Length: 446
Image (cartoon, rainbow, N blue to C red; front, side):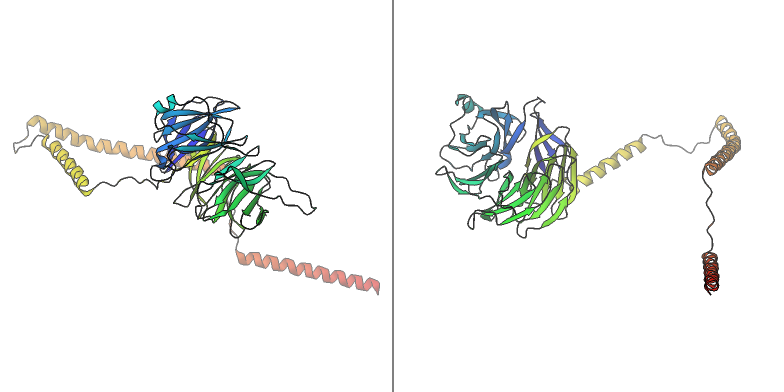
């Protein structure tokens, strides 16, 4: 499994979850080149992850869209105005080619026609296309529905609203709720998600630690509102079946919240700083998170256990979780194992073949005399070994004595029966004293 990470300095990295290391890297660290958003560049289907689109902020008012292939090699770039808050590739099949939808912080929704090659991108206009619609500003979070027909957005002092892309007009707007004193609560939409299998419902996490659930077919006020944390909720992700939401706050805590029952399912071990990105796996119960402590963490949503932790060295600002399954190491076939064994045996026979054969001839007199001298030396070597063994034993004994000198002697354990008898005698003496004191007081009073 791969996790694509975008950093604050314009570097893109691909991490392998099984190997816990960086597989591919693009870019050199440059201050002021933050990657705000990333998305897959092929819409939907099997070829979805063959291309990546990154929104790289070049200044406070301009951004460039960098297209990369699966090996993180840039192919082309497109100019965009403003800071990008939403980026989604529309599905293929349009007559005008591939289309990319982006939304800036100023609420400008732009539909880009993506060139198929770098040559087409060079021939295209160097300016960004005109926006197809304008939302209210400032936009803090924006999402596109699964049918790519509606867009929902919200932000600080901007309540949730849904627009129809076909007519470029607002379709539904949320209504703020009142507190106990009949005063309108402050508005701060931190992140939002269309609930899968229930497209009329939208789950919202706020900057005031709340989780709200809106139902566009029922009412404008939230049908459920829960105070989940005391700190602002910065980001979140929803499961593919729409059962729960995993969100994180500015202190690194992660919460798993059940959307159906409105209860907290549990907490996950988060980062040491604010969480900046959370993504769910498409087919497995896994969630990946990135925080300011520069660690990439993968949790199992079923057991809420930490399965992987990788140090990224740089501050992360955007995430993509690949839909591929776990990559296992290939097991060798039986034929390969047999070939390896036969090669090892051949090598062994070659070694034995290099040794000279010994005949039945009698040894010379010089050889026999050298053998006798070696036999005489053996007892002397044995005596030397025994002496060295004795010296070693004496040395170990001295070390043990020194250790015992510096360690406090342990008190011998007393018998439990003796302790009980001492306690009973003490209680008897105390009872006798109290009885004598009572008699003395009675005699004085009388």
